[in-house]
Length: 288
Image (cartoon, rainbow, N blue to C red; front, side, top):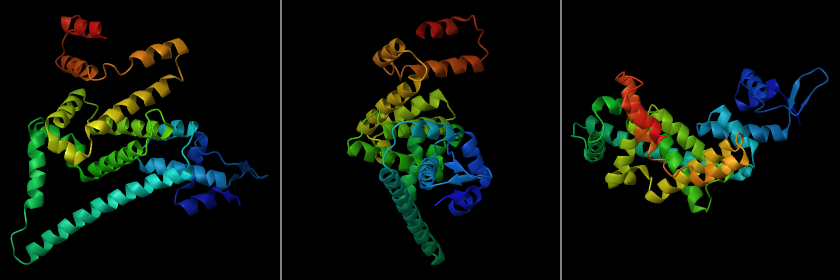
């Protein structure tokens, strides 16, 4: 069975324009074209489209999806399992929130004072982060304040934990994909501010309840660090020679937590209009 671009768009809830764009960027090429030149999509195309949409739901960009699908691919059943895991987690979160809101509404409707236990937990979390961030800075960190962003992180953490539990390794294609997603979300939700990144790491290291709430255990954090390094090395291998890659494999990631403070200091110097011939920049260049 083959579908025209219009039929496929209607059946999967996308627009014809979107499918044309996927074709133009070589993300989803139709199997054949009819004698009249119409795009025709077969079962293999639909399976690939499912993978694309599943990765889109995880938040990957089209560029990252293209990279993820260019190498060995996980069985489609695993892709579906990840979607189910994510949906189950989101449903659990939504159900819990709904129950809290229903209980609060019932208490208010009956004229009773609401049970503040859940809200006190939230205040405890806010107070914890206020040790490290000003109220203005917290507004710039949606992963601490926005429920939708928090749900995305919870789903990603759960997926990575499941990968680690089943014995997946950094460098596996599906783990690379998740590591790229982690990097993308972390940059997005910290405004690519290296200073914020360092302070968030300090929260995890110094506040045990932060790890309990986020689910990012020390073991998972270590797994993610290795996965990020492996994912980046996979990307670099497309552009570097084998001797260059050998050097990178031996050294890349060894000082990964020394760079953010340097980048933060450089940003502060730029914001303060420090002259480029200042010793400040000289020490930064020496460090690089």
